[in-house]
Amino acid sequence: MNLYDSRFRQLLVIKRKAPAFYCLVLVSASFIAAFFTTLSLLHIAVLLLFLLLLLFFLYLFLHLRFFIIIDIVLIGALILSGMLAFNTRYLYPVLDKKIETQKQHHGMILKSPINNKNNISFIVRLIDRKRRMYTPYAVKVFTDELLDDLRCGDIISFSGKIKRPSNARNPGGFMYCDFLWRQGVQYVSYVHAGDIDRVGMVRSNYITRNLIFPFKKHCIKISDRYLGAVHSSLLQGLTVGERGKIPAEIKHIFSDAGIIHVLAVSGLHVGILSFFLFILLRSVHVPFRMALFLTCIALIFYVLLIDLRAPVVRATLIFICIMLGMLSQRRIILLNIIAVSALVILAFRPLDLFDMGFQLSYAATFSIVLFQKKMSDALTGRMQPIRNLRRYIIIPFTVSLSAQLGAAPIVAYYFFRCSVIAPLSNLVIIPLVSLAIPSGFLMVAVHTLHPVVSRICAGTTWFL
Picture (cartoon, rainbow, N blue to C red):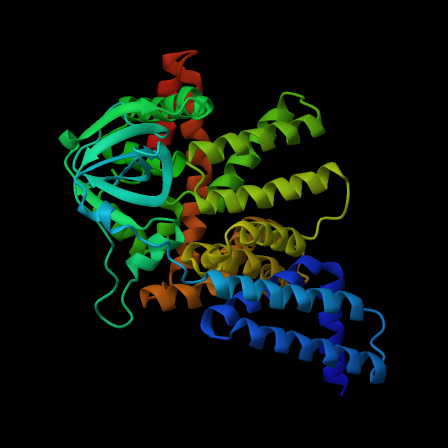
C-alpha cells in the first residue's frame, strides 16, 4: 500500500510540475490507439460517453475533487485527437490516373535539391497548367545531375514518367511508400538532367533565394577551397547538412562506432551553435536579454539554412522555449519545455509521432532529462576530490549513456543493431565536433575580412 501511494504521489508531482508531459503522454496514446484500431465514429462516441460516466462515478465515490476537471478535459482531448487521427491516418489523396500517363509535367520545387552522391533528389508540387493552379500532388524527382541555377521556389518543366512508389516486398521491410506519404509525397519520377527546364520562379520566396541559398552556397564554396574533399564533405555535413559528398567508407566507420548521428544536423548541432554564439555575444558585452534574442534569431536563420529539417526544427523549438523561460526569469522545467515542443509539432503534423527521427530525438532527449543526473550521482556519490573528473568525464559520459539507453530500443527495432561502444565513442567525438562546428562557421565569417585568418581557422578545422 505504501509503495502504491508513493508511486501515485510521484505521478501527481509529474502532473503538477510538467503538465505538458502529461498531455503529451495522453495525446501520443490516443494517436497510437487510433492508428492501430479500426473503431467507427459511433464506437468512439460510445467510448467517450462511457469514460465520462466513469469519471462521474469516480468523482462521486472516490472524491477526486482536485484534478477531476482537468482529467475530463484531457481525456476528451485524447478521444477527439484519436478520432482525428483515425479519420486521417490512411487517407491518401485520390490519385489522378491522367497524371501517370502524361509525359510533360510542370511544378514548383518545394525544397532545395539534395546531393546524394549517386543522384540528385528534390520534391516538386505539380501544377495544373489548364486551371493555372497547384494540384494536391507532390513528386520526388531523382536526376543524374544538378542544374546550377535550380533551387527552392523555381517553377520547372520536366519530361518523364511518374509513378507510385513501391512498398516493401518482404514482411518487415522498409515501407517507402508510407515514408513518402508522411512527407506529403505521392509520386516518384526518374528523369535526366537534360529533360528539366527552369521556366519561372515564385516571387514571394525572396529571403530564401537572395539570402539563405547564396549563404549556403558560399559556405560550401569556402569549405571546398580551404579543405580537402573528404574534410570538406564532413564539414558541410556538420554545418549545412550536405551529407551527399561524404564517402560511404566514412559513413560505415561512423556507423560502426555508433556516432553516425553527428553527421546528421540535429539537436546536438543546434545546441553547440547556440551555446558558442551566446558566449561570443556575451564576451563582447552584449546585454543578456539582447544576446538571447540574437541567438534566437540566429537559430531561426539556421533552421531556414537547413531547409526546415524536422530534427533542427524540433531542437530549435526546445531551445527557444528555454530561452524564453530565461527571459521571463521563471523556473525552467526541461521535461515540460520538451513536451511543449513535441505537442506543437504533433498539432501540425500528427503523423510525425510514427516517424523514426521524431521517436529517436524525443526518446534520447527525455532519457537525458530523466536519467542523466541519477546516473551521474550514482557514479560519483559525494566524493569531492574528483569534482573535475565529474565535470569533464562523468557528466559527458552519463549524457551519452542516457541518450543511448533511450534510443537503443528504437534503433534495435528499425536497424536490428545496437552499438555497445557508442557512449565511449561519443565521449571522444562530441568535444571534437563541438569545436569543429564553430570553427567551420568562423572560417566562413572571417574569409571576407582576412584570408590569412580564414586559413588559420581552416587549419584548425582540418586538424579537428
